[in-house]
Image (cartoon, rainbow, N blue to C red; front, side):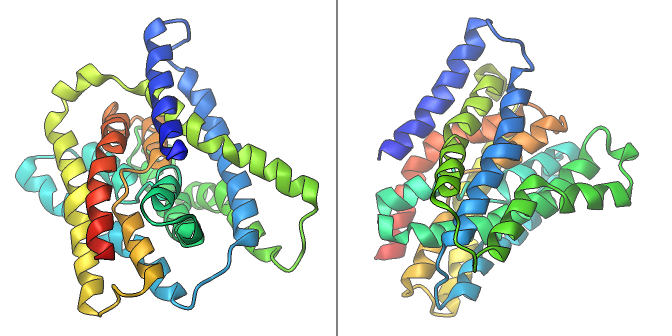
Length: 302
């Protein structure tokens, strides 16, 4: 439960510091740089070196990819009837087609399942959400952002393939046969531990609660799809194949019910996609998910 408190403290601290007016409006860019280029790669480099893979690895890893496809399809289908602008759809997909499987997901799994199930959450995050974030989401925000006309296919491919988080994930997998020295593991752990509080702090620095009145429709669509509709469709798909009795799959499906992705919101904000919608989705979605995820945990374990 302490991990959940850290989430709320990080978010609240960001909002509080923003309201003091003692830092510039662009301060969150520096925090975001640390999160995406130092803390996140450090976590990937350590975790992918240590994690043990379950027998149902394929079905577990497929969950975030199915969630992404279902969620993106829902937003595209809703775009015309709800008159959602192109940048709004891009922001919704970037922020909530991937679930917050690390910053929020790992503490939630610990709280509603058990600490022994955390490795499954890590696999879902690193081989699913993390890969999607480093490839598809990175490409999406590059194309949909306001500077998209200047991004060539070659430059976009280079940006995706050389993204520090993706390079760290690949290095962690490649180095599995090699034992890390104790000091390196400790350094990576300490750097990775800064990820959650600073990510939420960066969101808090951007969060403009008053903007929720102007963006209430898009915010409601994003949260209903992310917290209820898309997870329900993914769970139903797995139920059709009789996979809900597998503990690893239960945990993977629980990860699909997590709130919008913090790192995706930071990427969308950096490219000025429907600002401040991405930060609103996370700022409102994280506290709200503590109630919806509690319900999903009961359903999945019943």
